[in-house]
Length: 248
Image (cartoon, rainbow, N blue to C red):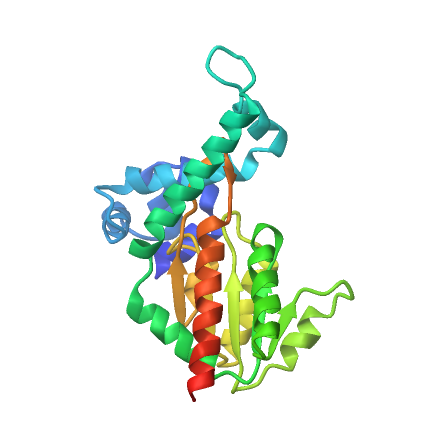
């Protein structure tokens, strides 16, 4: 889709441009932007813009700036116990929304794809890395062959070149998306190797190339996002894959 491609390539323009200027740059009519936004459940294009603006603020916010947000009302530093409670509350919110965010049929399809793979290639960078690392550990314990794509030797592309038609990739990336992860998932998809993805938006570059993808947005506290729901999803997926392989 022309608008989606433009949005992925020019997120700053989507965030701060006018509907007229964006439509002109994207080569579409302003009404197309409105319909595009409405397809994602927004009343109009301005609603979609707010999402891009929020993501841009998150992307440019340093960890030091996020720490400053932890100051309580009145400018007093937030007590450690209050910080702890806030993170627990955010994790609880994420877990509460997890079940409603995941389509059971899509989950079953992902399990089928991964369970039928000779080797599962796990792709993740930065904040997403612990999810893939846990899955690699659990798959190893469960005797499911997998390969973590992320080596100190810098041979990720060489590892991916070994993937064949009977293998499957599992990629994770959240905004701001890791360009390496997107490129690696795209490389597998380009060779007709199935990709399952966990991400946080229909506009994610992973959603564009995945055979099955899941949208999961973690709640945050002062801009810090945990991985509570993502890890629960990863645990469920890993165990489901191992269980299905055992039944074959």
